[in-house]
Length: 301
Image (cartoon, rainbow, N blue to C red; front, side, top):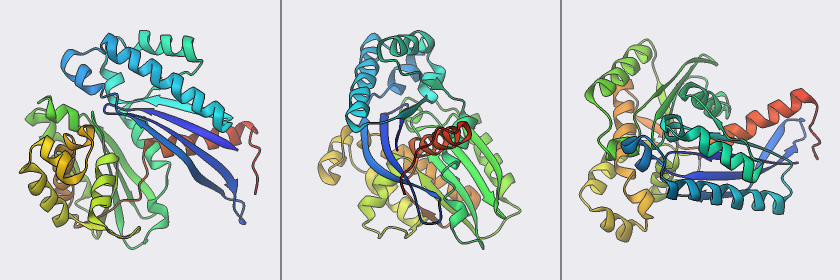
């Protein structure tokens, strides 16, 4: 059975198509069939002008239409779509999403920051790692940062902060917000020891690829600091040329590193794992659970 998820973020839209099959122990396995990313960059409109421009509105519609054609071509049976920080803040979000639904038949839910954190947590990565450690999920997007803390085999907290890469580029994050996140992280993680970070988001995935580390290996926080210093010394154009980055990655990778490094520093974390999961993966898992409850699953093994 093929399922799909659409994630409309502040920097990009993603379509993830996964094939769900049952393993020998009857647990579902989600095999990635395709991942298509379109750099809509909605945050550059919304975080400055509080609304999505007509040009971006048309880009959203064309992207969803293209995604629908791809889902039809792959034989996707069910899809779940969600929009995050930029759409939460856009004054014209309702009208745009109504137009998208009318012209494509695909409803897109604007989810809260806490719901976003919960969906990312649906991946349950920490549950399969070393039980001697506690884990802080850090998901950095264009408009917000989601934090989830996992200890003693249970979720301790989840929290969303309106601190994201595009907001930082647009100087839309004030000192109060930084202090709020800093105080929260320090206070909530202080009673715990042996903390390890789990990073998600396009920027940390790119850093992991650039590091040439083997899958499953962690990145030391010092390496992130080194990359931050190195990238900061170059212009966006130079980052694109030297590191073969797209423009929509080259500009946001520096503020993303700044967020990861600071959160890890506040929590006293020395290493971060990068399992290359994100909101779209969580949406697929959530969709699977919904279908299972409704008895609509037809899976091969």
